[in-house]
Amino acid sequence: MDIPVASEVIGMEAGGLKSILRHSLFFRIFFFIMGIFRTKFWLNLWEKTKELMDHSLFFRAIDAIFTFIQRLFRSSITLKLFTGHISEEVYNASLAVRIIRKPLQILAKVQGTWFKTAYDNSGLAKLMVNLGIMAQGSMIVQALFKYLGIPLGKPQKLTWFPLVLLFLAVAAVGAATLVLPVQYVAIGAVGIVGALVIFSYPELGIIAVAASTPFLATMAVAALLGFVALCFFFKLMTDLRYAPHIDSTGIMVVVFVGINLFYGFTSLHPSSSTRIALLTSLLMLGYLLTTALINTKRLLNATIFTFCTAAAFTGVVGLYQYISGHVGVAAWRDAELFGDLNRVYSTFANPNVFGAYLLMAIPICLVMVHVSESVLQKLYFVSISLLLILNLGLTYSRGCYLALIAGFIVYILFMEKRLITLLTAGIVALPFVVPVTMLERFLSIANLEDSSTAYRIFIWRATIRMLNDFWISGLGQGIEAYNVIYPYYMFSNVSAPHSHNLFLQVFIELGIFGLIVFLLMLLAFFRAILSLFYKSNNRKTKSLLAAFFAATVAFLIQGIFDHVFYNHRVLLTFFIFMGIGSAIVNIRLKEDFQ
Image 1 (cartoon, rainbow, N blue to C red):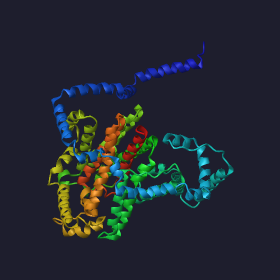
Image 2: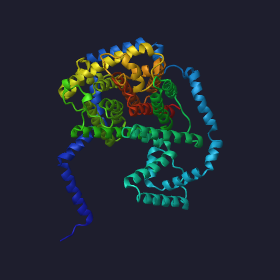
Image 3: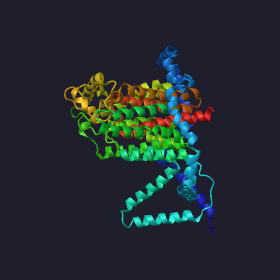
Image 4: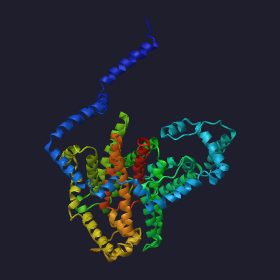
């Protein structure tokens, strides 16, 4: 009997495996889903949908309304300022802009002179060079830095000094395990290695901040951000690859930080307000670090991917809370209207705060489905988007529901007004697909019998009364400063830690000047986004910009119903989020228009 050779055996096994896979229900479903994501399928479907919509009376009426509004405001100076159609020469000639940019110009002159010379001849520089030589031999390090687009420099010959350092480090870790628990030693070792990496490459530090903000304590995140800031400043003074950069939004952030510090020092309760002002000022500087360090397309892609992945982990935590039943705080619901309503909060300790975080993450994850190239990436971001939307629903935050719908409308108006028809149909279909508890929760937003709604109205009225007397001076930051005055103005003995409105809170804490600068900062950010949006012909770039614009609008709409900066990790996330949006503008302008 002839014995088949190995190749024939393999061929027979492969043929049998293919036959099994063809008849497998699981794989048939899998390949059907993969086929759905083929570009031609979506393009053909969308072309047919557009053809139907173009003949729709409803869509033509909406298009006529928006065309009329555009013509009406086309000559408005305010609109030109908002959309970036006013010359940059006028902006750059501003005294405030020149005052803020002058220190950066001086810093650029100092860089590369005596400070850099002193560092290059120091023992620290030699230590970092040798550690770099040792790290270059790692395939993981090489692959990571190649993906991020960070140059490692030319490979150098390994000498005895890095090997001695490695031996001493291993010996120190081994000795530490004799006197400390292993988990503490592991955390310490990872921390030291991470600190050295961030010291050499601060751009990795800002990505680490974006990833860890939802999970670490506020002060831990602030310490990490502060360390990144120190490393970046050190790089500015010693490494010519790093250059100071500040855009129009960054200038307004600096002004807002200055006002924030001033009102902290002059607060009605200076001991607490000063600490809060220092902390929030550091967190707001996350915007400047993001725009300065995320300056290449690869770093930008890595930052967005990290941001979405971190959001996915918060979604997993939220889903676990709902399934396990470890949720539900009586203060977060109206028991008479909604009974035992379990609201997830993930790592943020409050469902409204978690919802505000998701409002930034969901639009970006959704648009990454369109922007991503490969099918696997699309499936990845589809999965994250569905998970986060489910979590937003389980927060039962009515303001977030409304804000997300508004964000979708903003995105549609930017990218494809025809989708208004589909959005309208989707809203009409919501009562038939959304759980009754979520629908009832959303519809109760105008129900004054709901304790949460009545509570906010009382606080808003009291805060507006306070503004009649403190609209210039402000109160300063924090619960203590707010409650120095609030009891004298409150209605029906309703106590409150803050005004439950972002704009009222900025107004009452920082006065009219702080509110104006805050609004100008947002205006500068929107102006930069819109300026590139109308200039670019790249469809994916426009989609990404529209998503950041829509997410910011959604976040600010939630700010009408809650003080979204009360949680400092959300405040940091928002400024890093704006920094990523501005980084898109800076990178695209540099690559596409220069």
